[in-house]
Image 1 (spheres, one colour):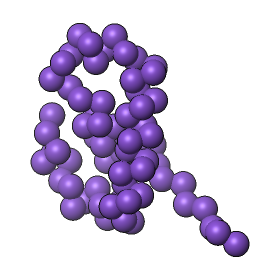
Image 2 (image 1 turned 60 degrees about the horizontal axis):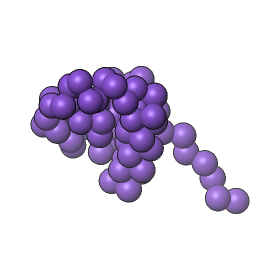
Image 3 (image 1 turned 30 degrees about the horizontal axis):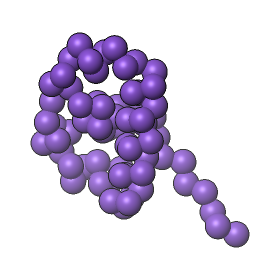
Length: 69
């Protein structure tokens, strides 16, 4: 898995901004490390951040936008 797949420009558009993308994907990567640490220890070529980016691109989780009223 590489960050070329999914296309990074497409993922930016889905998130709305680079900051939002970094925040949501990083949070999910941390969750993955807590949920399945043995998976990433066994599969050293798969990075949690790449796995989370692919999940976001595939629509397995979304970005929740809140208003600051």
